[in-house]
Image 1 (cartoon, rainbow, N blue to C red):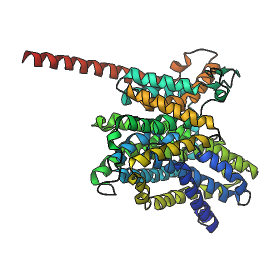
Image 2: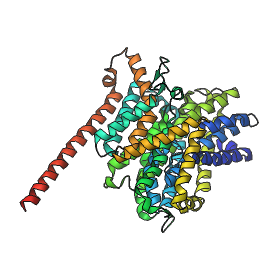
Image 3: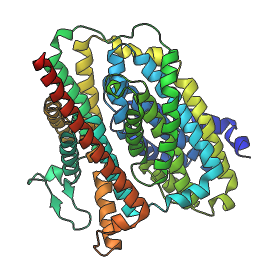
Image 4: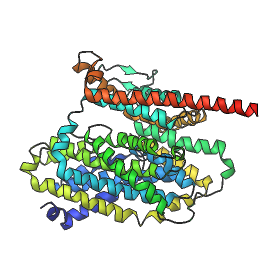
Length: 498
């Protein structure tokens, strides 16, 4: 019944149009799928409920892939969930392997998206019930563990990683406290009263910061092109490294997508850190490791299926985009929740079946366009770097049509450049910015439930497990660094003796 509805002419056109719009929106930093879906609501009045929702889900899924294009080719993430992709994806582009990075991104998006839809089809209600077991205490501890993992695995040392995270948390705290109504860290500037959008910070530290680093340290490369060298498709070694990362990324992304909040972003971060932890060559990460693109890209697309479970089965939006979809459904008089599959089975199964169709459309649409996309790298650097600045400024301005956001993005570009000079990992800054609000919210909720008793984080089993994992990682990092220090001293003594 679901495929019978999804394969009608109107619904196929809706899915294709949604995928196309989503890809374009993902390429443009700052706009985002939630804004696009909101703009589609007036259009939805002229469509049937299933066609409108199918178009919106197409936008959602297309934006996940589109965000990786500029992340890989220009190091300007279109979405917060594409930050991890930009680390090794851009390095691959600089090495002339941009086509392979885009190919594995498209295939990973298809694998993660399709696998999450299969899970959505057969496991919607049981998994949604399990997700409800993660209360505020568990989610707070999970965020703390994720931050520790990133600090240990991506920085030169734990201290630098923590400095980056603390700075990101401070940035996320700027603006008005929604609980007390008091402004924080605004320093008297009214423009900061509403806070700083995450995407503005990310565009600044990654996009603008990369241009500043190029101008300061790589002026000898002015006039050079980053054009691809050699083959356009994945080699046997690329496949060998990528497919296990895709499988792991699918599981991580889907489980993270179940929990309302920054599911896709957290999923991509956990996927990246897991791949580096499991790798026999962790030193390749940050230098163009293809599994570091495959894992996060698969993960952030797998999160879409988890987010749809929360919306359709429980009536709880797991993402800003699914929240807008809920509004659209309620405009038709349809209430998402436990009775949705009983009262409107044709609608639910048509939308689920269309997710399979949309994944195929995205793969067929984007794989043939890879040679066209990588032509961006054929632009000489003296023109490519200003292009990155133009895209960054456009993306920042589009957030709220406010020029102060452009100034903010360029200011964070300078900060990102300075942090890169002292080797503070920019990913840890981005992690603090993106997850800071959720971290504060879950901390307050947990303490409210426990009446101010901090023991709640240690007495709840899942929460204690996450914190114990973080503590073990810190101990492992400390011991391993001490061993390396002693080994280095012993080597010096041996060389002096000789």
